[in-house]
Figure 1 (tube, one colour):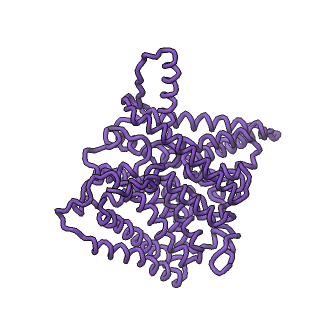
Figure 2 (tube, one colour):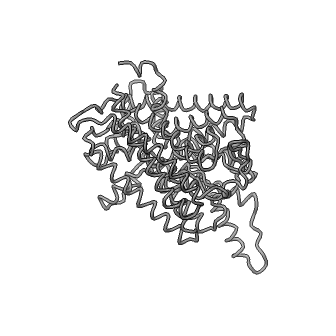
Figure 3 (cartoon, one colour):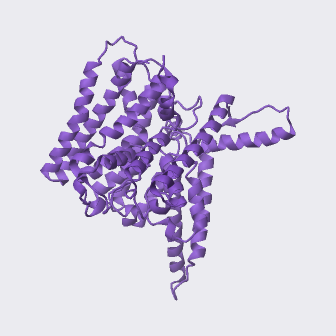
Length: 516
């Protein structure tokens, strides 16, 4: 394994982080914050920028060098180290500008980059020197709020995507292994849109930017300020869920909430389907099994929860305003159900209310079940992905039929493409490993925090699926600030592991991975 080539690629990421910090300090810090805060943010940006430039120049190679080859181990190592190092360097503004403790800063950064949306920021958070963050989230400098949203946006499309665009310019290989280690979901032959990998990455990035711009304009038209609109556009399309308000999107009107519901669902679907529609001019999304499954799951969950909300609190009409009262009540229940189904199914993490106060255990079970499959592969959503659940279901049906017809041969297909046995085996292994990590983290949280089982399971599930809010003491009414430092580090590492779909991080702990 060529460590110099890995470090060389990582230096590009560190320079990207430094440039983004400088941009935030220049555009937001100088306009909204005090000069001291803007200068602090700008000087902090010089740290990752200086490290990246130094490493880049030190490991600079000739143009005809081929050190960055298509070794799979190098791809896994580069992507894993990229996310881990970005979580550390990206935490510097929280430490220097807002005086966060190191553990809290790394937790917030990891949650932002992994688009989990879990936060430790509230009016009880302890800062350096034993101080308390008075005023909570909305008392933070605007540059820090925008940096949180920027972390979401960079992590949503995958920070390695930006590096992949630069690799051909440096006469490195196409970085196929970086792409495979970064893109979530089951990978089939039709996932890559163009023969050249850098062209596919470029198209996806342009689509990502276009949808973000569209969301920002819609939010602004619906009544948000330009600053809030840009921040929430960044965190919606990335399915990150960080907000500039302590009440999240509950502080905004119905138009904003319906718009956010739409864009969250759009971001949870495979971006390749949208690009194919743009390229071929034919809308073939419903031919995709994963897209159909995700739509059916969202519609069914929304219908059930809406019905439960209406039954729980029936709309008694007012005299002379029967229809108006009923429609208002129905719209409120439908909006509340659709929004939370979308925010959980897309792993965004926005909230408009605390779903644990609804008094509907069935609704909590539905939301908890949706935290497992979540969105589609090739999207910005977290979770196991719907495609894996489809493959598991088809394989289980085959095994049942195989008991009756023992001579039958397996023919498991996804979108008409027959899946090899190793892909099916890897899917089952991934599911087993996913559940094992989920249970182990929950057990560790109960031991360290002495919390109830509901809180432990909800926190573990929200971390590994990158959902954000969980259940118990991590429901939308709470933050993660009450946790001990060990639990915060464990949860942050679980977020990164879930975002990189387990294998990319866990391979680093195999001794043979580092041997020649």
